[in-house]
Length: 433
Image 1 (cartoon, helix red, strand yellow):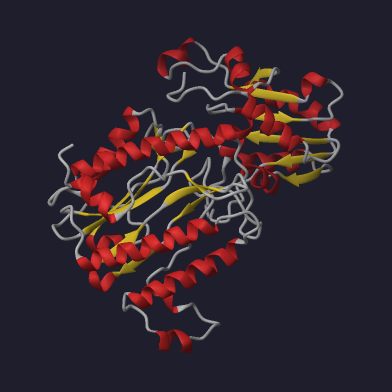
Image 2 (cartoon, rainbow, N blue to C red):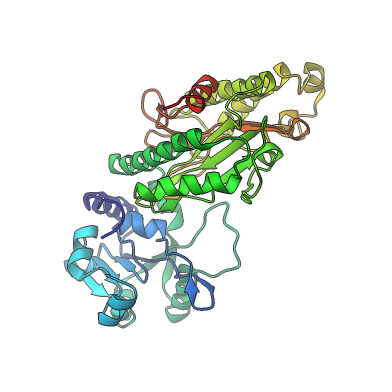
């Protein structure tokens, strides 16, 4: 039993049908679970399933392999799921693993075998296939010197079967995973609900003198007690000038009276991510300057949210949001109209000094989920919306972030119930409830 509620296998059955429909005739597709990553000595980091494999199977366990061969002459060989063989020793030391019956129920795949039989069955499968599709991590932000299980397998297989044709699964998976089904949105909503509880807990907890790591501990407490698998990413708890460091994760400083705290965190539930950012005053009251900057960011956030509609190109979206932010920065006295008029259009726009990052990214099984910026926005996509203003010379860093579902009509703010305005924040921080 997993910490989270079982997901209806119909999700994974439908997902496999969507992928198979994209494969050319006589193709085989092979996907592997993530590695069990060594930490130090005889310890390992907690296992986290490969998102593509999970999207296709719902199997949340190491040493899993999926084979899809839609044109195999024997119908039972068209979907094969390989799961780790267990025994009494593994049960004692590591706990319960999937039985064949449990793997069938979770995935909807009827042909379940033990992973230790995969190598012996592979040659017969490859003999009948013309093109082999393999899954590599082709996320645009990925840069790693570590060869993962999928990459090692691809290198071995191409050497073992040099006369086959080869295909890339990543472009197909990125295209498919970008559109979320209702069952997926339900998991994201659950991750958001847990994140909401954590934020409300923090509003009652924060006071001058509390340490950033104490806030992080309170968030983690709320996550775990509500059956999240943990944070969807490393929590950012950045007080004072730390808020101007975009990926600050040290979380080791005291929170001082008069400062702000920028908190960027989100729960992971059933491997689906939430991604929230809020900025709150340590003492429960914004100064006039802090409030002015806060409200400027909030106006840009609301403007940007409304732009997340089908047909919009992300590059155009970011440009429009940048222009809105530029206007707000002029109003705050951080930029002036004359300098903006004289700026070189070939260089980075001036507003980037105070707003150096993008406004939105895809969200789903990964916090920076797969998706391509050149693809027009479509209904069913989920994006973050997270403008910010960072003024190091004033010790002010403010970012606000909600998760937004694109529909055929107006965008749906999935975090609309989480306190957002300066007034809501102050009221909750100063209430006795």
